Image (cartoon, rainbow, N blue to C red; front, side, top):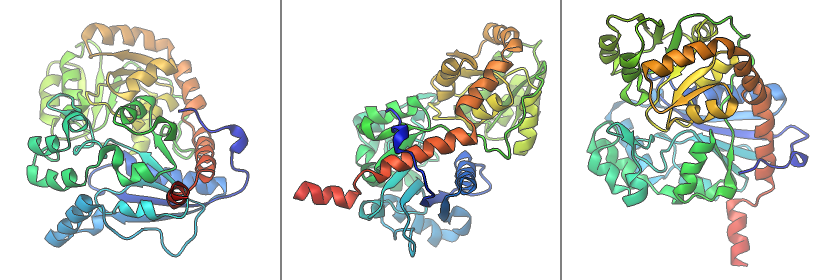
Length: 394
């Protein structure tokens, strides 16, 4: 999974078609934010970029939901890139508004970013009933339907089950280069049968216009994100030492559980804040707690914490746990316990310079765009899907 040789980097502007199906705006999405940030960064770099998008906000009523279900189940749909000839197409997300079969008909190179595990899992998380689940990969896609993994409904899961192809997904087969957000995510796709030689690791980043200066730190800790069972925040608050303050920012189905666990502790549960407000809080926190229970490919708040100079306490199996250890920017643990929080609270007081160094080395806009240009250069040097078929038939 090594990056392309630097000698193959792009030296002139590219025409880049970015394709993305935007999730509903009432459900905050890191994927949506990263696509917007990446497009803006590429434009600032001097590339010609056009965004070909579909938005769930524009779909309403039973007929719209039916069209989405058919698209997801069949993969059919018109190619979103029309009336333009790009050098490369960069696909982020098709669910639930865009088909996938069109990727096999492209005459230009395709790069696809794996933001989650949807080709392998109806829920896109590889997580069920409080634990990592790979039943669909190991025993067949019908297992997701048996469990009703999407929104707890077999009916809602059915289109995903019908459309699920694992490593034979049209996007996974057609892409010249697939980018994963972390090494651990890439390894899970390789284990499912995706060729390792077509996978590259390209983590999320913090754009220049949002990247904060390192903050002074503080005594209180921070959690920022959805309050859901897979995020593990209720369990983390339950285990949190009463003498160490924690600010929890977010909302979701587990909000009542979080508030119940917070009683009698210095835990301040706040509603969601804007991204700049979260970044400001990060800079004034002792540490970020990232207690995810699912194999989160890359939590954007991890990079944001490092930008603010704030170390991270993260739990396995999240990518943040592996990365915190590799980056020297925090502590990776199996579960949040009072003893481990107290240890991190003491250690993190001197850990801010290392966290910021890790950010500057790996998660800046400049680092991301340079690596992305390498990916594009590599993809352009690979025959397109049609060309590969022609060669194989020769």
